[in-house]
Length: 212
Length: 345
Image 1 (cartoon, rainbow over the protein chains, first blue to last red):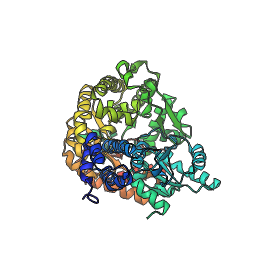
Image 2 (cartoon, rainbow over the protein chains, first blue to last red; image 1 turned 60 degrees about the horizontal axis):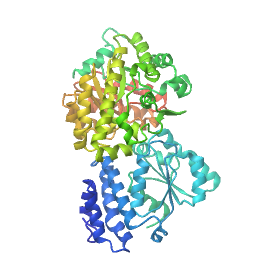
Image 3 (cartoon, rainbow over the protein chains, first blue to last red; image 1 turned 60 degrees about the vertical axis):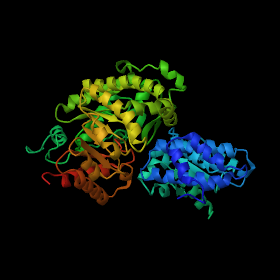
Image 4 (spheres, rainbow over the protein chains, first blue to last red; image 1 turned 90 degrees about the horizontal axis):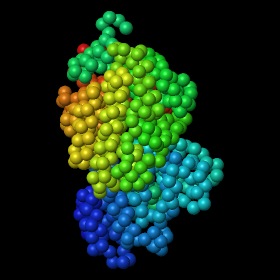
């Protein structure tokens, strides 16, 4: 069902069929110059949320989720540039793979978060010490960790220890295959939450920050 | 072994013929566990082919599973292409930065000769040593990455997807080079003594790409490769889903398919319908914390779901038992397969 009269379903279909032009046209037709967040909340986020759900229950493939995120990231960049003052009230988000060279998960989460209006500090594959230092310097409120490798997922424990030692209050949200195959792993490593897919990250960010 | 007991080879072949052997065959696909067994660093372990061979033999004797596994780690193939691996103290090595920096480089990309590669020679030497010990009694499982899965390491997964959707001609060019390498690498392992080849193709799983794209890409590639590999092939999705494409996978010429722990094994077995055998699908990550009771329950469950009538080999779902899985759990798996896996059922 569409949200507030917006053509969410049509937009979602355009994303899943990789019809970049149609997806851009749908947003352009609704864009008035100052309603970027309204379009994000009314069309883009609901569509990505449904796509995320479809990925989580195996109805679509990772490549489709990746492409949908990428198209939305481009669209949002065109209606809400990174330097836009409208972004200033969004929480400060960081992301890293903690040394994992498998970057796809991080890339998808970045796209989905950017498409939801967040600005992201991307710490690439930095290790725990460097990430902790950067998080502190940048005033990051929520740090997303995306890993494919089990040992690096478990490495979040070390990050948590550094945060505790340094008094860093940044929340940690984890995601990636190891956490999907062991649904208690996020607690074991001391994360504040886990996201089951890229769009779930947005809900989990709100949860850990206590945003209703 | 008593006189009624089959050898692992007999047990596996009987099951692959969709008949019931003396008990359910099981493969513990042990790689970095060998380093743990010897209490040596992972990179040291994989630097010595004779160490890997003797430890495979030792672990097979310890756990009593029905195969030897010559597999080192996925990024070893990338090392042969000039790339590198990142080693960790408690996990399989990870592939370093993609070796193809610019897509334009694909046009001039040349595959390494398997027989000239010091990296791949280690695996061939290990295979020869294991085979000399195993003879015809225990199957030796060799491994190749599918051309598509190799490409994700060569390019990085995001650029692989970008090419898959935008520039199939360039991707076809890369696949053509990778196919030749894959076939040569598989056949070299068979010549060295491998009994069968495990064709790792997670990129083709429905977790990663949609079924219609698989039918245009990974399916055709697998069919071409498998037809040129001079031995039986098992297709492994390394934790990826395969149910939506199970008939297609069967049509590639593979003898076995291994599925994800997130798919229902009974559904997979039913869908295979005697066309291919099933390998799997114990959750390797979950296994790290299994109690003895949980191990028994999980082993019993997969046997109940898939063992009747043969055509089933019990295994983990990823093709590699994580380093951090305790030896006690592996011993328990072995014990409970022998307890609950007896035929006739």
